[in-house]
Amino acid sequence: MNTSEFRRRGKEMVDYVANYMEGIEGRQVYPDVEPGYLRPLIPDSAPQEPDTFEDIINDIEKIIMPGVTHWHSPYFFAYFPTASSYPAMLADMLCGAIGCIGFSWAASPACTELETVMMDWLGKMLELPEAFLTEKAGEGGGVIQGSASEATLVALLAARTKAIHRLQAASPELTQAAIMEKLVAYSSDQAHSSVERAGLIGGVKLKAIPSDGNFAMRASALQEALESDRAAGLIPFFVVATLGTTTCCSFDNLLEVGPICNKEDMWLHVDAAYAGSAFICPEFRHLLNGVEFADSFNFNPHKWLLVNFDCSAMWVKKRSDLTGAFRLDPTYLKHSHQDSGKLKPAFNIFLTDGPFHVLFQHWQIPLGRRFRSLKMWFVFRMYGVKGLQAYIRKHVQLSHEFESLVLQDPRFEICAEVTLGLVCFRLKGSNKVNEALLQRINSAKKIHLVPCHLRDKFVLRFAICSRTVESAHVQRAWEHIKELAADVLRAEKE
Image 1 (cartoon, rainbow, N blue to C red):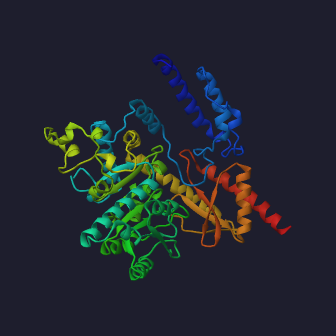
Image 2: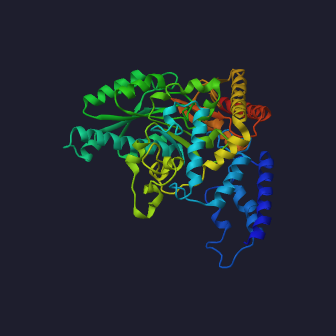
Image 3: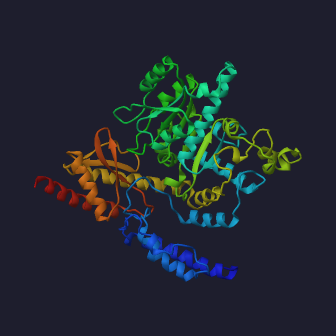
């Protein structure tokens, strides 16, 4: 494909994408295919001679689209949102064209510098403490990770390294293995499974703290676990507090948990993967109170802030905690500018060990990284803070609309407080009848939901997800749910 054809095909692809987004409401939200559907539809090896672009596009509709779950359909109410906007798509096109691997300043100066500025922009939108921002030339800073799972793992590994160094400094005879077998991390029993996975990868014990009646981690339960574990000779070192749990969007009590972590010298990581976007709205900012006690904080703009996947924003109070855990400097990654001392001060902040040193290769698990801050730059500029706030507020309003519909039907109950864009509900009665309702909903494929368990209850989750969802879609979804619920209850009586 030469430049001329690229121009033509690129315009065709933009038209295809625009038509897809405009017509997505007419597509069945969940596919009819069975596992293994795709392999028989394509050759068992790559073609020896080139295929035409027309053939590839035709196969998109014949082969790919029948197996797509349409996450951006206004009838998709499962999981949490995955962000999508035209400015972000355009920025991703430019990112792909530039194609830099921005692990260091020298690898692509704009990639590093724009990321530091965008993370400060976003931090200010959230009213994060200045310790997390970079423009003040402090000890902290922000970095774009691939996902909240990566951010949790990075924080845990950094905390583990910091704890080992601290303990060995006090007792040089301690080996790393002896310390590792005693390290223990904590999270709420409502925390995402990625927290448990981080513990597995990090080789440390992870204990679930029982949540309270609002599905939140409280200080008393954490303190009890700490005292028990210290008495058993274990070494508490890391706590994950969740703001907006996946199951029911509950919020751990940071104002209680934070001071304990600081007092006990434990790293506090705050995971706000979904809910964090809402904190740009003043009326929801109080949900972040207590972040000043955290060592690291993360949320996903790629969930609810119109920045396409992947873009997970992570801040730390002390970037040296990350670089101390992950820094390696092979010769082929060094650049003469790093040690020249001949650059202007404005550039030295990125290159030296002076007031601000950013080599993002030392802030993450992989070496390579894409120019993801372009998406943030495009979206923030083309929507503005007020536009992003309006988007969040619309979703929250729609969730409360759905909540009110559920409350008007005496057959149903709300199972957790509706704070943002998630409603947890169920038919009053057995888990079996709710499992049957969900099975009918997803078999009909008019809307898509996923469940959760809250204590011993099987619960249906209704998440406001699509950028294009309106009240009419919520109303139609509820009418559909009511009809299927009547069928389920009738079948149960027979």
